Amino acid sequence: MRHFWLSVLFLVVFVFADKIEVTAEQMEAYEETKEIHFIGNVKIKQNKSWLDADKVIVFFDENNETKEYQALGDVKFEVKEPNRHFKGKAQKVQYFPLISRYHLYEQATIDDLINKRHLAGTEIMLDMTTGRSTVKGKKNKPVRFIFDIQKSEKK
Image 1 (cartoon, rainbow, N blue to C red):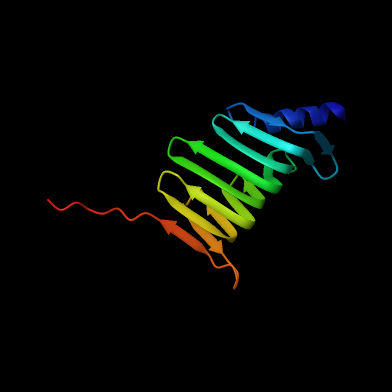
Image 2: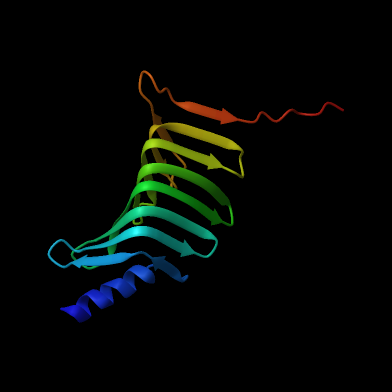
C-alpha cells in the first residue's frame, strides 16, 4: 500500500515532462478517495511557473491519472509559458489538466502581463484551450476588466 502512494506521489510530481517541485509542512495520502493533500505553506514550482497556497489537494481518477488540483487559502500564482504570462490570486483555485481549465473563487484576480489586461471578480473561469474567459461579480462587487487601448499612429 505504501508503495502505491509513493508511486502516485511520483506521478504527481512528474505529471508533466518538466520537473515539478512541491514543498509543504505536511503531506497526507488517502487511498480510498484517491487524493493527496499538501498542507501548510505549500509551494509548487515548475520551470518559471509557481503557486503558493495554504493547502493543495491533488485528485486522481480510477486510472491514477491526475484529474484535478485544488489550491485553498491565500492562493497566489504565476504562469510563465512561451506565449502566456499570467499572475493571479484567489482564496480557491481549481485546475483541471485534462481540459486545461482554471476556476478561481473569492477575491479572484488575474493579470495577463502579455496583453496588459486585468480581470477581477468573485469567480473567474479560464479555458486555456478555447481562450474563453467568464467573470462573475456580485451586486456590491461588480466585475472589473482593465485593458490598454493601442493607439494607431497616423502617417
